[in-house]
Length: 244
Image 1 (cartoon, rainbow, N blue to C red):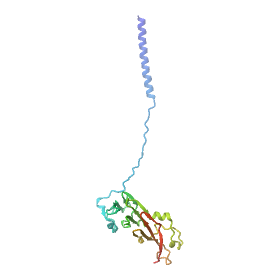
Image 2: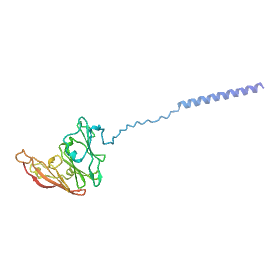
Image 3: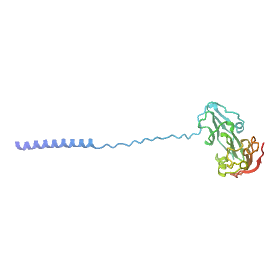
Image 4: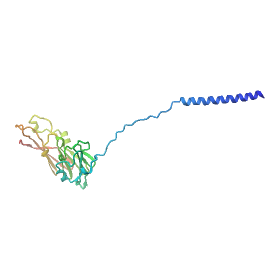
């Protein structure tokens, strides 16, 4: 009997030892298994400001008619933004949302905005933008940056004509320039800002050149652009500008 009891006790001891070894082995395996690491990806997201309008103090926001804007001689505020909302332009029965935003500090959101889209990026002075409505289209004469350009907007607020782009594409040679040995095509840097005139179906302008013999006067060529609907024709020379 004593021998059998001894065997039973020994079996229990062995079972306990085996159990302890199993626990110890499991502990070792768990602690030596590589832990999965979560990959942390840093996203350097750049927030894009899609709002074309800057924050302008209420005393520097003016609601004006087209005629009132064209009569401006200076900006309404100094030291930051001035905003003019032009409130009376209706094309084909559709009102346009027009804003001229000027900054005398060169701030980035200056420009001319049509239906919440920026059409002109830089304004040196509020007096250098002039507007007119002809044949149910908005004509914008832009003489900023020592240049001259005409931009035409339709009733949907889309730009349907840009004189600068057309001149760059057409590369028109001007007789007044070639007489002086200058073969550079006309562009919006050699147009006379004071020469532009607009009417239904046509607008005219003139180039400037130093081709006059006395060297002190300016000459050039008169051009006209005719249009029908939204089709604008190539600028055509009509007559030379006399020396003066």
